[in-house]
Length: 117
Image: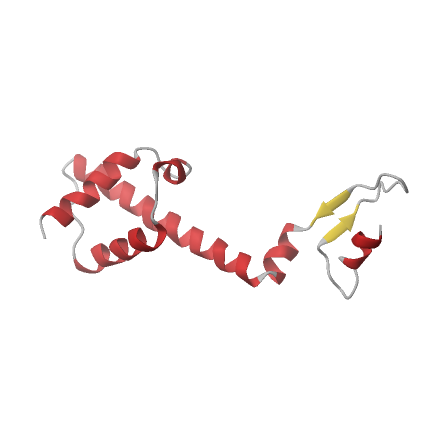
């Protein structure tokens, strides 16, 4: 309980005791929103992940459209954004599976433009 109270003092909300608190076995909740609000690095990671997902999903949609002959290869700004993303994030199939299936075809589409440069 001493440790729990340390995380509750000075207006910190990291740990919250449930209303169903029993003295010997309290139910303790970790407040996710307060972690994001008060942990700057976590907020930065969350924002970076959201931006990465957006770029990957757009790339995946364009790759699908390209395979149906309804979209061209990336050029100029789109290509540079995606190149920077790939270098910075180094995506892999395991990560990509959470957001869009078909990592290999997406990366093959991306590679087509690089091969033509």
